[in-house]
Length: 246
Image (cartoon, rainbow, N blue to C red; front, side, top):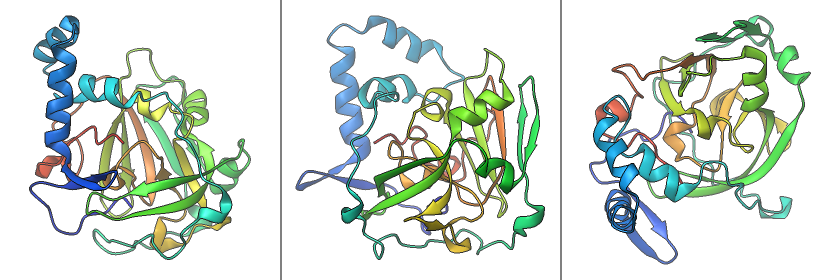
């Protein structure tokens, strides 16, 4: 869910096996280990890449943003565990007039209706949704791969980041590699049924490679950019980690 958490936590934690490990501490240790075993160019990039979040290059190595995530069988779905958090309440969106805008540094700015999206190749996955607040749920998401939307918009070769803007004012940004991941979807189905407004209808981000606050609901615009702006994400601008990989 994009609008999670409802209250900012100074040290969010996630589970690694049976232990609770502070996530930022884990990444600090892992990143330090990587830098000491021969990634000299990575260190140089971290120092010089002031326009990029500090953790992007380290985490992209740790989490391998193009590596497919193992999926679950349909029988593993946990329909009652996906908690609805809200940001500013559920916006009222009329499906018939809804349009998804693709713009920014692209050759083909586009405006897509729900029918347009549903006519694109359909993708479905059963994956774990992980919230920074400490809970998780196995969910089936169905929709269109973001890489197929990228093929429509034809972004510039200089594009490194993608912004997602929601009808309730929420905003997020991702690295282009994570956006291109084969299991990153713009979903309009949940557990085999049409997505409902509480869960982000008519269209939301869904992916097993990012924490829940990166998975924006009610997305109305996707902007392609070569640089990050001062605003990088609602929770990130309040101190949360930007990359948020799993």
